[in-house]
Image (cartoon, rainbow, N blue to C red; front, side, top):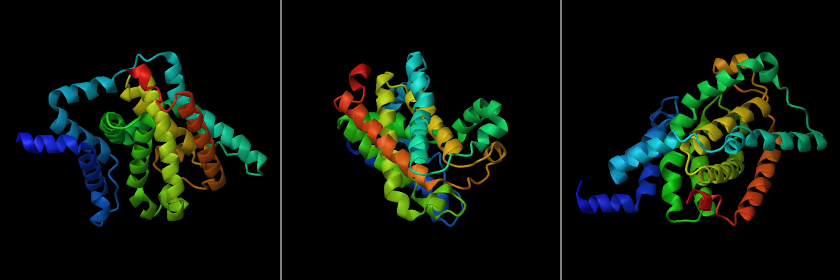
Length: 274
C-alpha cells in the first residue's frame, strides 16, 4: 500500500470502519434478502485493524480478546450489572402499575441458562465486538474523552440496527420505528457502561466487550420479554414485549451512567487502564 493512501486510511480509519460495517452488515437487506449480517462489525474491524495497524494491531486485539485476569469484581459487573439495572426497573415498573415479568425462561429451564449464555456469544457479541470494542472504541478514545467516545460509538451502534426495524418478526419491528431515538439512547448508555468496564479492566475485549454485551442481551430477552427456554434455543420470536418496562429501563440506565460519568470525572476508568 502506498504511504499516502495508508496515511489517509489511518487518518479516517473510523469512518472507513463505519462504511465497511454498514456495507457488510446491510448487504442481505438492501439487496432484497431477508438477512442482516451481525458479523459485519467484527469483519470490518479486523479489516481496518489489519490495514492500518498491521500485525502488531492484530496481535493486540487478539490479546485483548483473551484478557480474562481482570479481578473477580469486574467479572461480576460484566455478568450481572445489566441484570441489576433491569431489576431496579422492574420494581419501578411495578410501583407505576406495571406487571411482573413472566420469568418464563427461568421457570422452564433455568438450569440451562449457562449453556444458553455461552451459545449466544457466537451469534451476537463475537460478530460485533471485534469491531465496536476491538477497533472503534480504542480509535475514538485516542481522539476524544471516553464519555464523548461512548456517545459517538453508541449512536453508530444504535443506528446500525436500522434494517431490523423493517424486518418482520424482529423485536425491533415490534417496537416500531418511532422508538428508534429511544433505542439509540439505550445503546449509548450501554456503550458508556461497556467503556467503563473495558477501561477499568485494562482494555479487556473479553470482559468489557464480549461478556458484558452478551449478559445485557441475556437479561433483556429473559426479563423484558416472555421468551421461553424452548423458543430461545429454537430461535423463536420474542412475544409480549413490555414497552413500559423497556422505557423505564432506559431511564434507569441513564441515571446509572450519569453517576458513573460523574464519579469518574468523565474518564470512565481510563486512568486505571493507563
